Length: 198
Image (cartoon, rainbow, N blue to C red; front, top):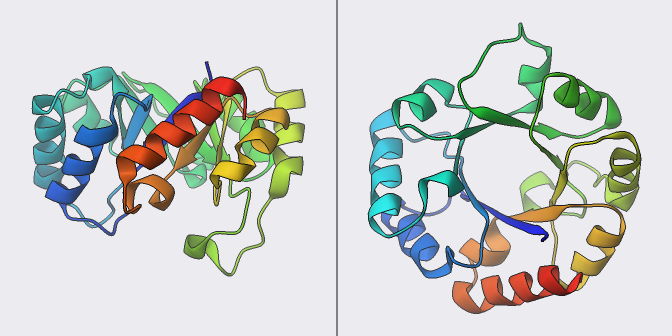
């Protein structure tokens, strides 16, 4: 089954984010909490609220907060590409990385990554000044890695088939679901496309 990852947008309050995830969590495989401005207390409140609302703990991935993830008993952390070239640390959790090219992806695999988030594949408002990597990046990564490649960046519903055909094991979305007028309808539509292979 192809995976559907959701990543917090940085544009919603804690309560808004939890409320949206509550509505869609049955359609998604992982929820990444990536809020650079939040304190550890806010992260802990968010995690506890998500768990109270029925989100399984194994679906939660913390971005770049390994100590907090360990404290909260979470299974997975996600790290930025910059961490690939720092002294290697040992983590209790499963680790994934963001990557933007084959060199970063190979380094992530050498470090034991469980998967990589690769992108951005299509143009996106969050990276207006950076050229998208396009489907070619996915094709290269798929041919040279043994770990799953999750595509991220500007992936509209009509692009899902192309992304999967290029070798992605799933997709990661932010605003296309979390900022949608009807997040339930959008998450169901993406889930159906992933399950049908596009």
